[in-house]
Length: 452
Image: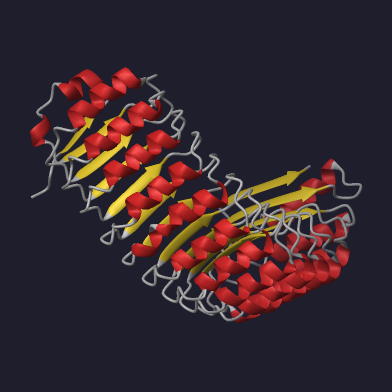
């Protein structure tokens, strides 16, 4: 029997409903300027919904504070039959006391199998994060967990306390953790690594540690845990702007090489300092991930240069099952040699259907690189969607036109987006000629071209 979902957008309507009858409940009170008094009324009503199995509660951008969050925890403590719980509590001026009270209530929800908790953009420190960790400590039935604690101040100590509970969640198959912008260093990241080592059943993992200061040491600690997650099929790692160097990138690559079942990988290392050595180490490891079908790499502003691109390209040659590839390589001092090596690798990816390649900010790319890229893409006969962005300060109109002619040979292209930045001395008529070459691709349905 399908249980009926009850939805409420007004507090009074919910308070006057038949509370004991609710089993599947969706409450949306976002942006309602709810303060503690309103939260108290909500919590009192929820405490009587003792037959709930599924609860979705949206309270983002209100003012419930510590008292409201603690009251919510007390209410949820009565809902012992909950198996699916989603709480959105971002931007509510919740601090350590409130989130600890919330955690105490969640600790009583022993039947939870799916939990999604968003407490981003509050005032949570180490104590509060540890309170959430304590709530997770006995949740051995959890299979799906999403935690968003972005934009707080949990630091290393809070991260360690938070993930200590994860070590007991041995049945997790799906985990998403966002602790970006939390003043976390190497110690906090390494503690996560120890916790993940117990989660051997993980198949889907998303970790966002963006804009912290984890450095090489932190990445290496995390990598040691990933090496044990041999059942991972989907992995997203966001480690952008974290002071990571070549050693950290190479260590991460070595760990990924053990994840032989990976089919989908997104790796964001924007704004670090991995250099050519780190990019090459990463490439050598990815060459072992032969089952990859979807790969996204964000490596913006890492000074990888031609040598680093060549190292990455060596990995692509082995990833023969790739169907979707996204490479963001902006501002990396890449020249013709690097583009030619990348082009040669792409020419072997004959199963590619979707390709996004962003080379903006690489001012050393010239005519030779543009020609080689066009020739390579012409060999990707299964390409249906292509987005290409080039820095063209050294690329002439003649070779831009040649690139357009080559793309016309991608006989299965249905969607094409080209972005040319700073083509040398190009006029309106020449722009039209490039456009005219591209549209000769027989199956093209959507075509966009930008000159800026």
